[in-house]
Figure 1 (spheres, rainbow over the protein chains, first blue to last red):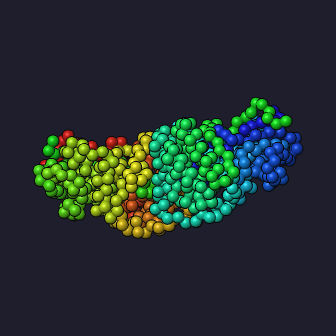
Figure 2 (figure 1 turned 120 degrees about the vertical axis):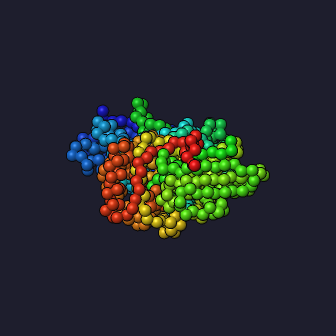
Length: 311
Length: 311
């Protein structure tokens, strides 16, 4: 095998009460990537989507992890990566993670699957470091493992898959810019113990609710008293969207990653469609360009494509 | 039915990373209580254990919840409670909760089970208020529900039962005094966000580990970076006990409630016995009087006794 085509899906980090530790893999949107095995030690990045992302490998979220693979091995190999991004950069649904995770997943296939999934997460985090300055795995892990993942610890890496009942997810991406680094800087370094207790009660409730398939408990636990009150100020319409969607029957939801995308979880497609309509109406009223998606949990993560979607 | 005999078990609050929200019901020790239905509106508390606890109902942890029941109902009834405490007050394994929960459980049986388990938790918290000044449910809930409980929220009350694989629990009660109020006052009101994140990663891991029956994950998640480093200073020998017990194969453990009791979880009885020996040797060496128990999780909570253990 000299080349491979893959789909690298979008992901939702944090899941409201699981800041920095929970992530969920989405069925769509996903990036399309082709990776070719080269016979010399270099990494080439080609972009076919028109986004102004750096193609210098050290500065590219797909390139940096591949350079790390080369530096860890003595093999005389290299990679040429062609990326067709469907996940808009800066949307808060793991665009950088998809490139990083997709690149290492594809490289591993071409190298004969020498790496474990945990290895792939470790390697892909080099891409997140390029994108946001911090090695974090809350988008990478669900992209590679699929489903819902808990990153109990990064050093050492401890990833736990959390089972979940069927859930329909509605996403809206209001096209405003929220930089991950800005979204991080506005957080206080200290939090009240009583708020932290409420937060860990909620994450415990969410994990239990997901594993039991208890929709009511999932809904009650989707509460964030620490991050959301601060970050939601960066997203026009956030409080109104959330309130109206819950009134329409959504279980709950919040900011996807560091925003600006907002997600809502519903039990059925009919509710998810009403939720989408509410999101569209509000951002139309606010005169903010936006995309919406109705999707589900992708239980498998990155997948290999048989058809070549590239010219 | 005019009288009833019950066993009200000891409980472990907090479970290391679940401060204020997790609790576990123990198979032993347990208090013995007899409650008689009276035909006048009064509460009488009798103690048969020699502990110098107040018998004035408003000041007694069993009395206060029963007075609350009377104030909520128009019935011309009352209760005479005889308590034989086997759970030493101040040991940190839910002695006050056992009296409060046992009293309302027994009263409810005598009244024809008019209250739900959630009601009983709400009522029993009036006893915790007498004991520690704060309405908390992390001992009450497991005492009434049995097993391991998550108190996701107190107002409104939201109690979630968490399933668990077989676990053997070794307890040591070094007989020093740690007041719950003191143990609370030494905690900082603010914590670092990075520590809170680590804590909620651990509680999510613990809940997932318990529900999956994944002993290794349970062990890795039994870490407390916020409360234990402060409170353990009040318990001589804590760090050494914990280190030695884990070396001997215990999955992990920590301070029970606000201490001074220390608990360790093991997969099998043999390890739990070695853990007990380590605890006994250390506190013998430190010349601190102590009790140890080897016990398991009680899945049922308070139980009705057929035999009358009272004279």
